[in-house]
Length: 161
Image (cartoon, rainbow, N blue to C red):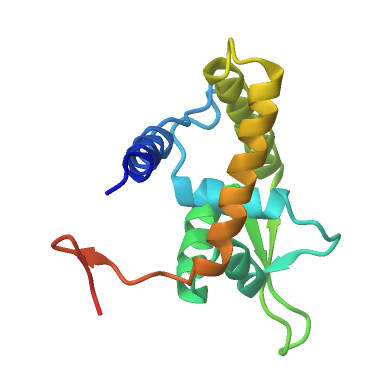
């Protein structure tokens, strides 16, 4: 294996572990928040349209199956950060909206992420930060076509067929 691939692989694994357990809001109304709840809130918060998102749209946004999105939204609803809105017509899917608490969580999470990044990048020249952002965005964009909803689990170090 090349040294660069090894460094990238190691860095990605370390980032995944660090980020998976790092968010906890300083605001006592939130406490510890499940990552899936943050994902749902973020999908709704970043929704580029004016309309509410359906469960299908949330699943597509998060690159997960609809049953998984349904479970994630149910957890977020229990946490009080989203509301499910029943359709007026039978052909319309259930829509999901952020509650006031959900909007507050989205703002809090965004503030936390920016502070987290500022702390991590302290001492980096602006040119390096800009270049890192460009490379990371390019890397992330390359991942999107590779993602499929709920990929097969990895067992015993081998991908299942």
